[in-house]
Image (cartoon, rainbow, N blue to C red; front, side, top):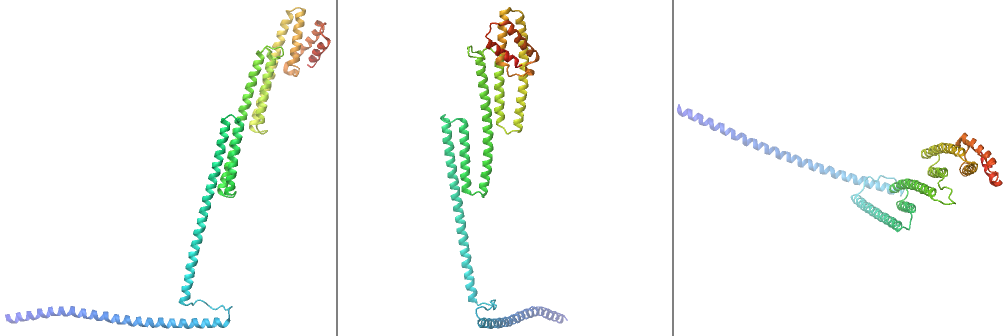
Amino acid sequence: MKGFKDGWNTQTYIEREGYSRDYVRNYSRNHDADILELQNKQNEWLKKYQEVQKQQAESLQKVRKANEALAGGKGSNSTASEDYKSEAERKAEQAEARKAAVAARKAEAERKRQEAQKNKDLKAAVKAQQAITDAELVENYRRYADENLSYKDFMRQQYDIKQQGLDEQIKLYGKDADEAQALMKKKTELEQQYQQQKLRYDEDEIQREHAVKAIDLQMMYEKKDMNNDLYHDDIALAEAMYNNDIDMLKKRQSLYKKDSQEWLDIDAEISQRQREQDLDRTQRYNDLLERYKEEWAAKDIKEQERITLKGLDLLHKNVRKIQPPAVGNDLVVFCHLLQFLLYLCTPDLHLGQRDRFVEELQGF
């Protein structure tokens, strides 16, 4: 019984193990057979594909020959299709295309080189022109520093040199270039800047002349000289100072365009100065009238004659161009009184001199 069991178990184990090994072996054999079969089929399909390719190439060659024959039969004006070309023709065309591309690249490189050289030469020319302008500016400044040039002329020549330099640069660039447009804008700005500087200089020059003239008038007022009409003559000094002021204002006004804001402001200043002068004249001559009245009453005949002649001479020099509203009605009345007194108190006065004084008084 035991031997039977052992024998049965041993046989069963062998059979089981043997079955497993046979299964793997059988699986490997089957897999190799499948791979070999696929390879054989692949080789068959490759042969068939090569045969088809060969047939297509032969057919294509036949069609090309037929087309060439057809094109040759119709002459040089034939429009036969050229879609089918030989390998040699395609290679020749590709070679020509490569040559054309190389030539185009060389031409473009040469164009860029020439353009770069042109720009380089242009920059060098502009730089040289700027150096010329700078040298001229330095020379102009040297002349001014050596006192061979006035400041007004110095400013003008500086402006002219800069403008000429910009014009030369514009010629180099060409008027349509962007650089030229920027330079023309710079020229306009330079013109505006110069005009502003010139205006300030002219204004200052007029003010200096006015101040110098005022000092000269004041010195003449203090200078005792028989030919000096201003010596200790307050009325004559005031009139001279007024004329100096008006002359200065009118010169300043001439610097501006008529009816501009600056022109109108100065015109209003002139009118204001004229009104102030009219008021000052009225006050001065009213004061003079009161003083002469007081002196007249306290003096004898000879002294009254002297006062009369002095007053007439004063009026003759300073008041003959003044209208009555500017000097006051009281002064007009006083002038007529002086005229009457002149005939009464100066019978020995030279007739021509007396009549001259009378004519001046009748102007009122």
